[in-house]
Length: 144
Image (cartoon, rainbow, N blue to C red; front, side, top):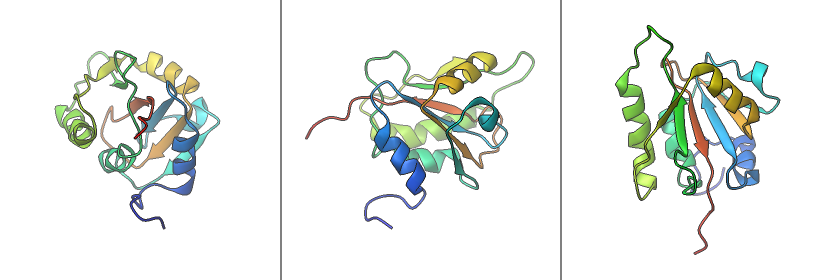
């Protein structure tokens, strides 16, 4: 165990976050996401919900300030409705760690899958919220 780092972050997830460069994308996927079918680098975070995982990751991870939407979620399929509480929980976890609250882009389901195929890694969580997947684009870590 490391001091100052959330125990929710596994060694594999910490390694992936450290290896990512600016512009790389990581997907925090819900429990129903076809991560293993889409990507060769899947990190397991079974049993963890995405909002607490965001709270653990974002103190270590700069969102990309050079792209219009460093945070994206899957758009609902026609006929489905979004639960606005899911996005609110995620923003509540994100906002304490960023200067400006991000506007979350909504990406059509198959386009989201295509982005996931190109992602640095997919983290399979225990999140059960419908349309609970979230994409984060890593930015440049400021030098202090």
